[in-house]
Length: 467
Image 1 (cartoon, rainbow, N blue to C red):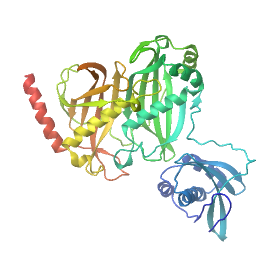
Image 2: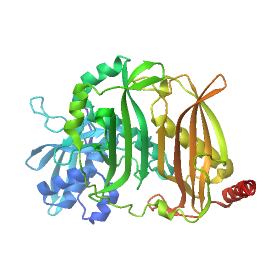
Image 3: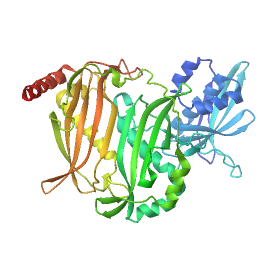
Image 4: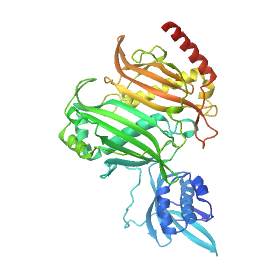
């Protein structure tokens, strides 16, 4: 098959083979479920519908070296269907597909890169949106947005999502929700007089996703918000689409306060502006019944095993294992000017990884084949603001030590002229797991022997000192 023309060219041809739904899901990596459901109603032939999508992928890969993130139906012309495919570099490519019967009962699908006439209207928007606002459901009070995981999101072993990705998703989704009042909000935030500071944030990880998975992010303003006192409480749920169903990946929380900026790093609670208050009141959810779709075999905190050590005084931790100093700059800040809250989780991750690499380097450099440490729960509670060009010193402790995992505790300080100002504190629960391959679920496992020897030795010292 060959094409020629003045515009961009590309093509593919594939015979329609009869495969099981499971085989098609594997071939298409369980993606494009939305467009496939629409196609099945048009084609009345599941194999034909799946072959159309396969041809689109092949035509884009062969012609541009691009994998489609999202595929939408643009126009149906008898047996021909024009699709709009969104690629990883945020370009839209138009692809026409149509079936051809070469011999009786021997049907193939032809895919051609093309374009609709300029007079045709564009009715389908890509699901990876420019910041025009998330979709709002008036019945539930939930804002939703659909996007796709990137290589950066999936920096965990076996190309799985990393817990820090949920923090980035929370920030992006929050900003999409505020798009309807963005003009007024940006004016206030850009003035240098007002801002929003984070009080607490929290992540409960319930599953994992892979690269280019379709993700639905939900966010709602909860009735735990105390708007007269400038407190805004947000809840998040993130799902991946797999086998035509949504699988819960994480539940998250973010609490913020509207403040007036009195000087560099010094803020004071301030009344929420009228336009913002009206928006929050109109969209606050008084009650929401979220159905937990379960962990689908993913480890839970209940599988962390028997406790071997716990800090006796939660206000005074003895088991200090690491202290790091992190210089900060503009890359750590945001449009308000203070340090963005996601930095605190990135620092957690870095310190945990350094500690584990020190004691079990073979595991940390073997890509998961010798086991892996997964974060199940992480939280940060903020006390004061930090600004760019401050030195942030972080102390990490062992708070709890279990058969299959650990709970790390963190204290964050701003250090200047040998004086320390406490910024925040937080925790991170990790569980050690092993899995057969990249497609299998992680299974909780006893901590590696090298790490256990270090933990037992230090625990015994602390116990003797306590006695």
